[in-house]
Amino acid sequence: MSSPGATGNAADSSGATVYIIVIVVVVVVKVSILVYVCHKREQTGSNNNVYPDSQFLTLTMDRFLNDMEREKPIRFTSQQLRIATDNFTNLLGSGGFGAVYKGIFSNGTMVAVKVLYGNSDKRIEEQFMAEVSTIGRVHHFNLLRLYGFCFERNLRALVYEYMKNGSLDKFLFGEDKKLGFQRLQAIAVGTAKGIAYLHEECQQRIIHYDIKPGNILLDANFFPKVADFGLAKLCNRDNTHVTMTGGRGTPGYAAPELWMPYPITHKCDVYSFGMLLLEIIGKRRNLDRNLPESQEWFPMWVWKKVESGSVVELMMVCGVDEEDRDMGERMVKTALWCIQHRPDSRPWMSMVVKMLEGATEIHSPPNPFAAFLLESGAPNKNNSTRTTWTDTSCDSGLSSSNLICATPVMRQYGIEMASS
Ligand SMILES: Nc1ncnc2c1ncn2[C@@H]1O[C@H](COP(=O)(O)OP(=O)(O)OP(=O)(O)O)[C@@H](O)[C@H]1O
Ligand SMILES: [Mg+2]
Image 1 (cartoon, helix red, strand yellow):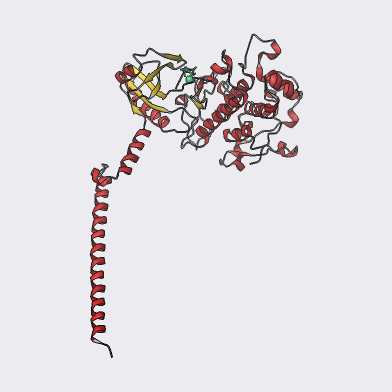
Image 2 (tube, rainbow, N blue to C red):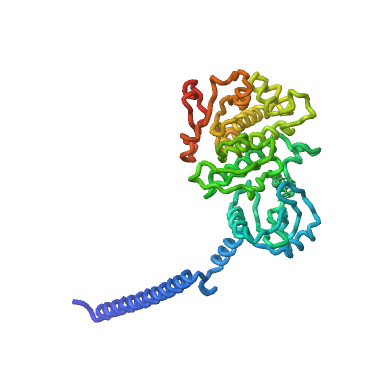
């Protein structure tokens, strides 16, 4: 038998339960309505391609959208660039495509404004903007950032981030040879990473075509950034080859296929990088007519030293200290692989990075000049051990295991190029 008190308690507790259920239902209904309204507003917003009222955007979202906005290259007016560059007074240098001026925007951002030669033909405006917008969206620590551009009748210009230490050529060939071997090795690795990104990680492969010390810029900490990939022609990943008309690149760095009627691929950049690497090792121009004839062309001289087993002498001439010799040898071998005559004998840039970082063993490179010797009728000593990367079997994918390929000749001689 239950007491009256107990009955009262039961009634109280069931009343409380009902009350809680009602509250929960009300809350759930309110939240559902709120979610539905928000969802509807969002849909309306995205359908119209406009953002919903600012009250529906949190602060974080606002910031995110702003950041996204900044990723896009900005269009400047000639007036804005004139003000930023103090009417183009501070010339940083000039090259084949234009003159570069230092500038500063009112918010303190330092820039380098490259004023392109030639006039702005309205017909190419769309093409110009399409290319600039692609280049402006390519971001990598080792690639020079493009902030924006100007396309007006009287001015066609590209606005880049400013690099305090200018270009690498100054430190290799000028008076100021203050960069130590390890710093130079780091510059070589960074540069290789930047090019590897252009070749292997961009949605559409970008071939640079003009890798050389003048196009490697150094920031305040001497970190390298590859510049001028704005001049690169875009080439679709599906197309193995780009058909080119006319000459390209800079003599001394341009791969043989750039002036011969052979297909051109991203491997032309690998060749130029090899030439750049030799100049980094030697701290001299590859071609120096002031030197005795045997040393005049540095790449050939380097190969002769390697072939005759005189690498130590080579390191001494290049001023590489004993503790850096291993690194120096690795750089030399990598360079000789990069400048192979046949494009498919050259490694991919991601493999070059591994070679330079010591992440893979580097086998003795074949004679890069064998083709010249054959053409001139001279005997090709290295013919029996010619080793190549065969792109037709290697280029199907980008994983490191796919990059390491052995040709039948390589297998015959037990030569394995690299392991991951
Ligand atoms: N973003 C930058 N920051 C600082 N200095 C720069 C910048 N861009 C270019 N320069 C300087 O301007 C010089 C000229 O550059 P430019 O690209 O016009 O010529 P180049 O690299 O010698 O030849 P090319 O026309 O073949 O690229 C460079 O060597 C460098 O010293
Ligand atoms: Mg340049």
